[in-house]
Length: 77
Image (cartoon, rainbow, N blue to C red; front, side, top):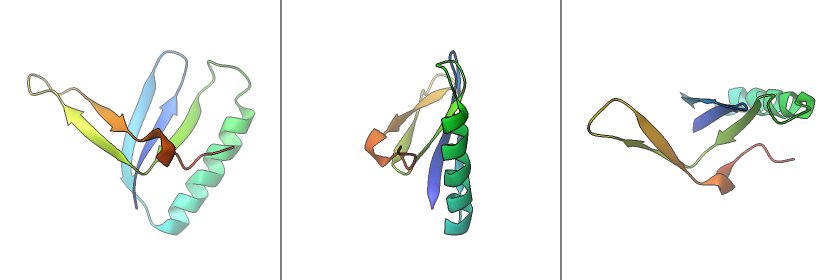
């Protein structure tokens, strides 16, 4: 399954797209839930994993952004 993994902190987000087998995804979800539980205040990073997203590129430079269906987040408390 192709997923977008976002590590979201107070002032920045690191985004990574990965193709994962179900067993790998299960481990990643388990880690993300444990990580997010230990994140005690707003600036500590949280991990979110999305299955529905699209990379939108700007033709003028190498930067872009993701259009995300936030309902597709696999990390639900």
